[in-house]
Length: 392
Image 1 (cartoon, helix red, strand yellow):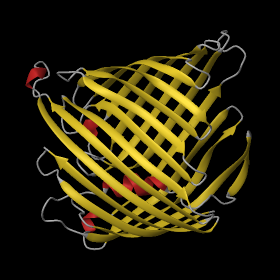
Image 2: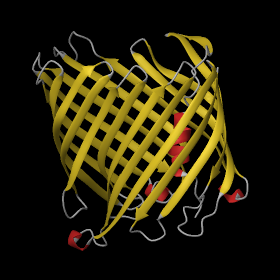
Image 3: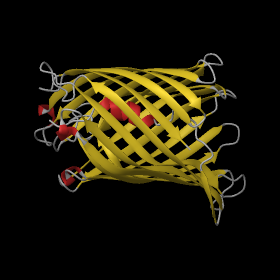
């Protein structure tokens, strides 16, 4: 099975942020100056298990290079936008069938209307619109295959301020995903919800939310959805310390029982040099294996970022993904569903040395262990790499 390392793409490639941005290249626009930052990121590494095998593991060395442009998200008038475009080259020494190269981009555009006056003729009503576009290489977490994926979506959030007693909100989002390699799994999704955040104290609010998600797939000629109800608390102790935690239940159309859900986020500035970040999220989505499946996942992450000096920083990160797949052979008889499960544990470490503002070198080490009831889906993998990052 062809694969590109999940940890490598999800943890390393997605965090091209070791060097600080330089002055960049600026040009004028009708709304003001826009600055673009060219960057180059190149890595050389070793992968202990390039095919996710359990037993006869194959190892190889690789190089990965990105050459691109970054636009930091910033406001121009009442619009804020950002993104990046880059050319991606991955080369394995012994296994040429794993080599990849592709042009990718991602962008985000937001429209904010958060005025203290009237919106739509209603006092205390605020709104925000976001749109996202991307065309990039992603690893399918179930198959390990590299997919060229196009996504676009838009979200509308309305918030009505209830004086000092809280906030009443409503939101709706639309997204569309298409795959180059297998259009059978192209899908559209609509998620809408209502939320109430009554104030408990001046720094703490309760969180109550109902959410409905619906998804359709032309390839499978199927429609399914879920209902999610959750409640919890949100507290912001300072600009650098906050915590949110909610619990609830997910009722999916294709599942034979409800799934308990936990969602939370913690950001804690333990000292001036150390910041702890923790997240937990539970979701339900159709599996990409075949039709009439639902995949419940709970993903937990924990990270410690330390700024040792003006030049040296380290990051320690761990995650645990608990996944349960219900495969319904006949959607009209969910009691006959087959349940599969997997647990994935991953840890990684990074050391970064900033030579100049725009130039950094770094070393990364990661480990992943998957234990699955699905045949041929158990493996262990270690990756080590060194690299250089330049941002102008």
